[in-house]
Length: 467
Image 1 (tube, rainbow, N blue to C red):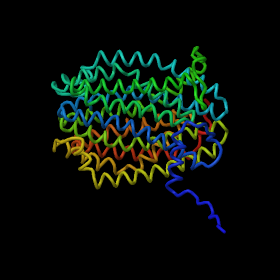
Image 2 (cartoon, rainbow, N blue to C red):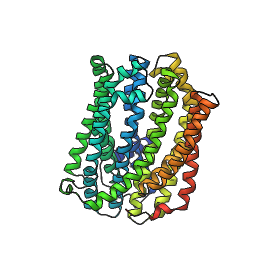
Image 3 (cartoon, one colour):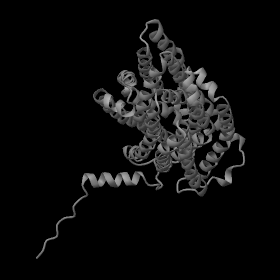
Image 4 (cartoon, one colour):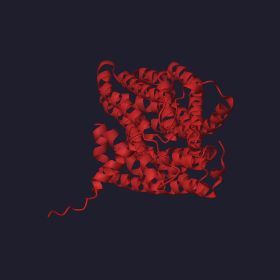
């Protein structure tokens, strides 16, 4: 007589693989009920992978452009520092769309969520036109004002013109991904960026070979354009989480005004941040192209690890918006605490990696010993505050997910313009620390911002915001 053995439970690896597959699917889920840790991880996995692809975008360009010399790297650095203004508009629109769509989803009103999504696209049209035309016409002036050498300006102008001329795909890629994240469909946002980056990886070396530094800009713009087409297909077809948006494009000025209000504060918030980074780049530029190139290499590497952490922060933003829509403020608080803990642990591990392996990481991206030395100094100073950065970005996104974009704006204004810029100038020039003074100012500012955000978050006024 045979005795049947009890059914064996799946192993840890099998369960983990099944969980990851579930997170990467577009299955409809209600994130306002059930396990909060499970909800955070289901949202965070595709969001972390999405942000990883955004950071790979930057590193791919830097890897291939670095073979063209330090002037080419400097041109990319100066362009990217000003292009952050485009990202600022894109992030501001995305932030408003995420907050409003998440709130409507939490209220169990999917048609209203689709309506808000369509109105955010209507609002973006004016911004796209202004950014594209202005940036393309002023390309060479931008590089000159930012302190580029004559050779850097001459080499980089086509790159800058193409990047700004393609502002439409940058804005739409960020905005539509914000819509999908607000609806809880993080997987769709992830796949669009993977597709865009896949095209960029294939095209970048080919087009650089034929067109030089301009080829990198063409590859990035085309890659992002393909990603946007993928997004639009599903946005107009509709998904299980978000109905199709095509019936809702007639301007609704009440919704547009609400979106513009949140966008304005979000734009101001990231404009302050972006303008500060532009000043940091300008301060570095006075120490010549080697300093700019080293700084650019370090920033791209820093972003490679910071952007995945933004994925966890974006998960907190979605959960805050949906929880407040469902009138569950305590769940929103617990979501922020859990996400901040996970992010802090991740960033502590990244800090250790940089102290052990910053040299090989930098050498992989640039072969110039002087550029390498500058980049390593930047990494080892700035990453001392990585744990603070990880917690701080969760707190910032919690405010934004609630639609309270004004609070981070005020905090950023104080920390970046009243503190970081004067401190960086004093350390770099008055105390003659050079570029290391700028790096130290970044470390102290980002850490201080987290402390201030934590104090304000505990007061809880963000729970009462209505959008």
